[in-house]
Length: 238
Ligand SMILES: C[S@@+](CC[C@H](N)C(=O)[O-])C[C@H]1O[C@@H](n2cnc3c(N)ncnc32)[C@H](O)[C@@H]1O
Picture 1 (spheres, protein in one colour):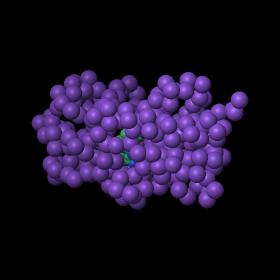
Picture 2 (cartoon, helix red, strand yellow):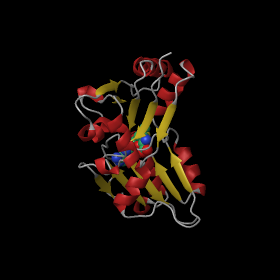
Picture 3 (tube, protein in one colour):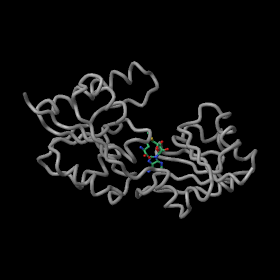
Picture 4 (cartoon, helix red, strand yellow):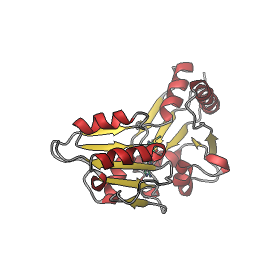
């Protein structure tokens, strides 16, 4: 029987190609097939841009489409399609590396791809290479510690109800808001009401040439932000 290829989940950092680990780089250069999420409107995606300088012409590249929607049926179909594409190579004994922006275990599409593939083909071996995640990169570009001593950290993936931020502000010392773009206006109002605009740092496209920092937030009640934006709030002892 043909030996199966391994699916590697490879964390590639947040933009600066030097934020890849040596393990990620070795894997990306060793495998015959490299997959990544397709970019929007025919543009390369961020993971693809990060790894492009390291790929060889003979490597096969697969841009897998994952729509930015909440509809679970549409998403499940996309994961099935991506898993089937990857499986085509694995069953031929070829290893596939899936490049993931930031860290592979932190709000990553790879999780769904891996779960879908594993459900259909439990015999496939999946390996994960950890990496540098956006909250850590944002803290480093700000020149701040993300947490220290006994500080409690809360990470909110996105804010669908303002109450969730209010609750986090009641117990956490440091709060990271991922995917803040769509709820920025609401967040700004909550921070203003709590007099925390001077304790909040917004980082857009951290570690890329388009990196921007907004701080303090008093002058920015509205902002048109990139999807790649996050907010760090340092909540004084309450
Ligand atoms: C689907 S999550 C992926 C997180 C990623 N796996 C990580 O480890 O950072 C996407 C969110 O991560 C944050 N993010 C990722 N890269 C970023 C960057 N370079 N600058 C600022 N925020 C970033 C943004 O909040 C974005 O909406």
